[in-house]
Image (tube, rainbow, N blue to C red; front, side, top):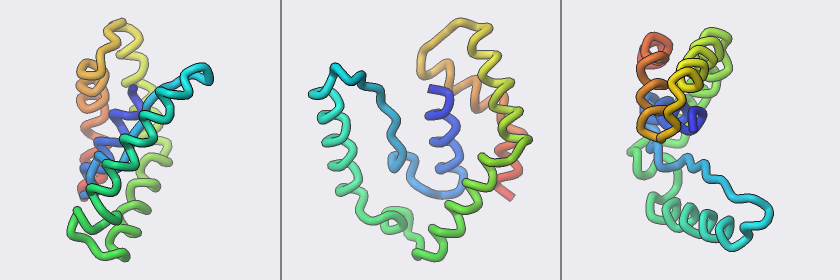
Length: 117
């Protein structure tokens, strides 16, 4: 859930619809659930259209923003911030999506500020 919250926040910050990222869990024994997740995600992407279209961006702008996001999440500073946020989540022992997202957003605010520049 923490990775999900981070990626969604990064995409939103660089101006890419966060709905373009989906992380769902299904075990090997849950084939129907897996199919359901993939079908729903595919339908959502068809609704949004090609990447950049819903965002009002050219292909070059999309490429630049994705590169910026990739460089950001690959940096040591961000990995350290994410590690600290993950420790805080484990310490709190509150496993709701809302709580994890709040911790990620709060603990990583300084790192995310550099992405907006």
